[in-house]
Image: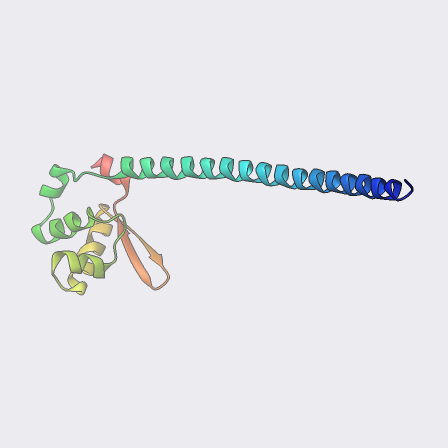
Length: 139
């Protein structure tokens, strides 16, 4: 009988150790679940932001103003129409689209900037031309 008591004591200690390990494991699983829930919430918020930006970008898609385009000379009209296919474009992009020289497109785009039909901004070494939505509605 004396041999059973130490064996019973060892079994109780082992059971207590297992219960402790189980509690620790349970706490870790709970932490992982909470972390996943936070990540899913953040991902959902990010997805909603991206969807909103996408909808805003679609709204910003501009349709050519026929009267304004018809008032332009043919060479400038070709450049302006090519730019409607891009959000922002370099003279190289416009030249690829119109099959004209880059220098011709650059000159045409700069003339349209001076006339107020386009805007331009520098991004590093490249100059990007774009149609300002505020200008489009005023034309």
